[in-house]
Length: 113
Image (cartoon, rainbow, N blue to C red; front, side, top):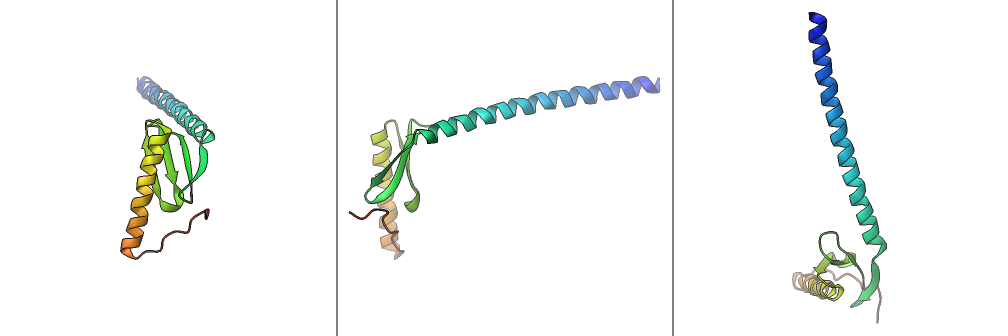
């Protein structure tokens, strides 16, 4: 009788571990799909100069296009590449105005005209 109880407990533990293993395998597969989407997105990015600062534009993960200027910590997004760049330009202007108004140093441009 005791062997039957132990056997039943072990069977439940094995079933729980198999279920957890399946859940983890599904999570890993989902993460691998997300990594592939990110890699594809970054492989398709364009680098350009906007108002003297280096910016990148790429297909977004949650939006059609994402644009960013790392030096100014500014981002933009939009349904089109142009919308993302326009939003980014606004964010850049806002950050530069903040620096000016707060007496903070304005980051040097990446490219001087």
